[in-house]
Image (cartoon, rainbow over all chains, first blue to last red; front, side):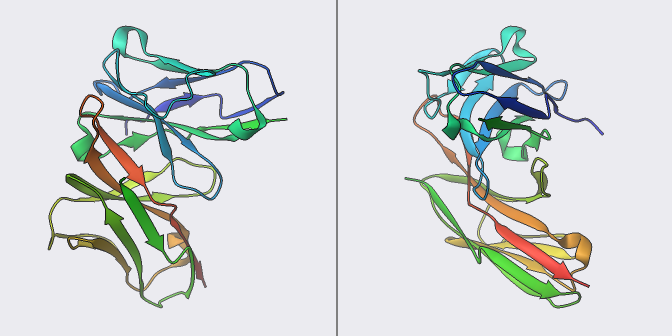
Length: 113
Length: 114
């Protein structure tokens, strides 16, 4: 069964350092999403890509977060500088069309100390 | 503002004890309602999509229903392996680019004791 690949699975970083997460969506899925999930909460959308273009980044803290999807395949989400409040699970998802549901990856658990 | 409220926050059942989880929503332009299952430390796993009031879908011991204001996830004769957090999400149009993002509730943590 096709999967969304994410790495790393866990990341511990110090406050003010830079950190990056990588996502490889299911082959053929044009839409890619980055969500953030704080413990005990539901996932919240950070950014949505359609191919290589950003469709929605209204909830992305652009002063410290950036995302790219060069060539419309895999994607990288970066945080610089990291803050204590960024500790969360970062989930990547992809879909052929959102109407048919997303497939999520296993996520990256970020701890900022 | 689109909102999704799930209740209860946590639910403990004995094996075989049927129950229901609730998801109420307010959204403009509902495109679909989704149910996901999430195990600890993992990403959400897709269960169902419901598109219109009156629609029902089933998978093993789970049955999802939809009205104009809420959705229910019925669990019949649950087993310990059904223990997980169940997330509800609504899909709505956004003003920015017409993206079809999912707005999630906080989830219901289900524990089924043997």
